[in-house]
Image (cartoon, rainbow, N blue to C red; front, top):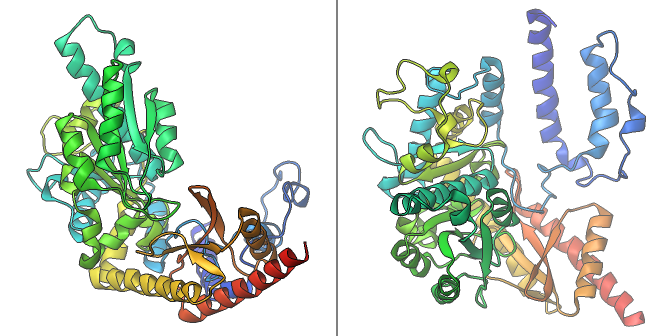
Length: 481
């Protein structure tokens, strides 16, 4: 493909994407294919001769689209939002064209410097304490990770290294293995599975502390766990607190947990993957009260802030804690300015070496929507969640299972777990809307997440009427059994 062909097909692709998004309501939100559907539809090996763009696009509709779950459909209410917007897509196009691999400042100065400034912009818009910002003389700073899972792992590994070096400085005879095998990290029993996975990768044992009746991690539960573990000679090193849990959007109590972590010299990491976007609205910032106690903080603009995946914002109070843990500096990655103290080499802040120019899409979105436009987006979704909440509350057959704070409604039919599993199966088999479940205590619940940028009240009304009709069917079937 030469430049003229690219110019033409590029315009065609923009038209295709625009038409896809504008007409997405006409597509079935969840696919009807079975596992292995795709292999028989394409050749066993790559073609010897090149094929045309037109033929490939025909196969996009024939082969790909039948197997796509349409996350941008206004009938998609599963998981949490997967943000998308035209400004972010445009920036992704530019990112692909520039092709920067920004592992160091010298590899592309703009790639590094824009990211540093954008993380300061973003931190200010959500009300992060100044200690987390780089500024011109700050000790903190932000970096774009791929996912919140990576951010949690980075924080845990940094905590592990910090404690190991401290204890070895105090007792040089201690080996790293001896120290790590005594380490213990903590999280709520409501925390995301990626927190447990970070512990598996890091080799640090993870202990889950029980949450209260509101699914919130509290100080007393942490104190009890610490007392038990220290009595056994273990070394507490890390706590991951969650703001906006996956199952119920619960918020751990930072005002209780934070001072304990600080007193015990434990690293406090805050996972606000979904809820962090809501802090762009000042009226929601009460939910992050106590953030000043944290050593690191993370949320995903690619969930709810209209920035396409992947863009996970991760801040630390002391960037030296990350750099000291991960710095390896072979000659082929060194450059003239690295010892000046004026530049950042982001390869020391992340698991992979290479990195894309992801701050471009953050820059485009923040500038083209503005803070007010993004606030409007969040507030609209919160209103739509309350609209669905009211529908559920007004039907005596259903119950609300957790407080509705942001854009997630947890609900179920009054009755057995089997009854609710039958309802979910009917919902997802019909493929008119898409939901996923979770468990809160011993209850199987349905999650209704307000996800899509283009969602309107009429989609909420449609979803509720559909759920209501299927609930009637399930209850009638139950009476016959």
